Image 1 (cartoon, rainbow, N blue to C red):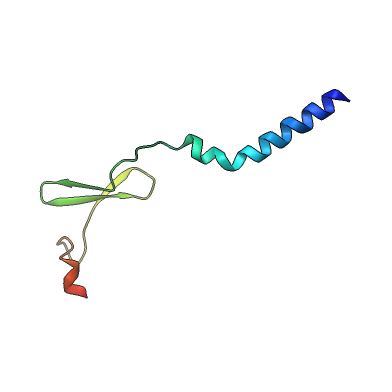
Image 2: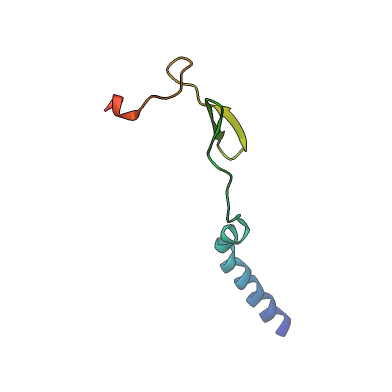
Length: 69
């Protein structure tokens, strides 16, 4: 009977600590979202770590956002 109680205690502790696991295994520093090489700006594509060039409005980089407001 003692082993059953121990099993239940350990199971409850494990289940209650599962929501905290993402906080324990994430890195404190993340890679930058934007990298500038020459005149081209590259953005990270989601969580893949792959960088793609920032191309919009044809082949020119984004203009000042004040133009769109």
